Image (tube, rainbow, N blue to C red; front, side, top):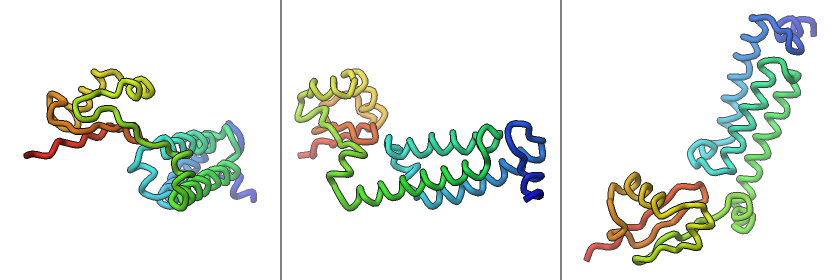
Length: 164
């Protein structure tokens, strides 16, 4: 136990060597945890997935700088990743649970008509929708768009009109 204390220190009075060892150890542990959490953690960019990224970073950083005890910090991080993975699995098994946890899409535009109530719900203006239109489709007007949705992850998707 003395060796662990010497290598990792305790509290906020850490030596450079101790902080560097904590950093290297946390990096490896974070890599393992993120791999366990799955690719969706970064790919989907939903609020559900962003929570784990932000919390893991905050908690693990406390362990690096000695603001929280080292091993309990690792344990808390493991619990967070297991919770994330479990909730993701439950979401796959239950569409109702998935909707509660991750939310759902909203239609913003359809067949030439803006759906103002849904734009208001999302806090989006018509200009915001046009900005996304230009960025996502490289189109200047909604004339070539059949439907636009705001997805659960906050991105806007556009369904083009079928060519006749």
